[in-house]
Each structure stands twice: as structure tokens, then as C-alpha cells.
Image (cartoon, rainbow, N blue to C red):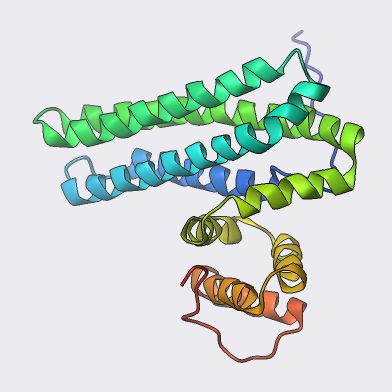
Length: 244
């Protein structure tokens, strides 16, 4: 009689300030969607494959920006609490960035030469699926090991300061671009927390710009719920944009 394996999963620890939460949600959505799109794309539809390659370029850009922010702002703190893992975490950033770059190049090169479109499309799909699994493992390590240790060592205020340093290092156009992918990936309480913080700590035009961006990128029902939770009136702010 075959014995059933005992599930090893347990609810992960959560922390009051999670520097990974919102951007990791966006990255997961982008990786999942890009992988699924690669699996169902018409191999003979060159315009669709060009559009997909452009999307992969954006994914690679997002991953590189995220890794750079971690390395610039969080590396010293990680080394202080996890000295035996800091080098491997930093190395994973470089390796994963190189891997997604190779996938982007493959998607672009495959379109520039004649060949078996169906085989190329499937190879890209398999490559993205494999890469996504490795990236998910990296995210899990950061969320389940790194973040709890940072919180235990530093507490809320220093982590908020790290978050502020990351945000202040991002150019307005890059921030708008990142938020356009982050906001749809977040739940309504995440969005309210983000926008409430901006309303309290950022210039009014920044808050209004992000509200306008939310109107543009969220489904109408989600946008309405967000405005209600924020206590905003029904006036439309569509057309406003961060960095505009």
C-alpha cells in the first residue's frame, strides 16, 4: 500500500513592513502572463511574436531594476543578518538577469531568421517556464527567509527608511512605469496603503498623478473601490499621470 506524503508547507511568516511584497506581486504577474502568452501564441503570427518579444524586454527591465535596488539599498543589511547567504543572494540576481536577457535575445533572434517557427515558439515557452520556476524560488527565499530576518534585526522604522531610499532613487518616469504593473497586481488594501502613504508624505500633484494612473490601469470596478476606500469624491482624474 502506497503511503501518502505528508505536506511540508506551513503558513509563511509575515512582517509589518515587507519591502518585497508589492514589486514581487507585479513580477509574478508579468512572468506568469508572459509564459502563458508564449504557450498559446500563434507561431506563424510574426507581429504577435514581435509584441511578445517587446514585452519580454520590459520584464527583463523590471527584474534588472528590482535587483539593482536590492543590491544598492538592502545588501549591507542582508549581509549583517545573513552573512552566510548574502553572496549567493547577490549572485542569484546576476544569474537571473543574465538568463532573462538570453531569453529576450532568443525571442528576437528567432524572428530575424527563417526556421521552424513552431519549434522556436515552444523552446521559448519552455525556457520561460523554467526561468519562472527558478525566479519563484529566489522570491520565496527573499520573502520567507530574508524579510523576516531583516524585521527581527531592524524593526519597522529602519525598514521604512530603506523603502524610502528605494523609492527616492527611482526616476518619476520609471516610477510611473513600475506602478502601471504593480497596481493591477496588488489587492485593494495594498493599493490603499500605498496611496494613503503618498497622500501623507508626497506632494499633492504626485498623489493626484498616481490616482490618475490607477484610473488608467485598473478595471473600472477596482478603481471605484479604491477611490471609495480612500474617501475621494467621484471626480475623474483620468489623464493625470506620474511623472507627467
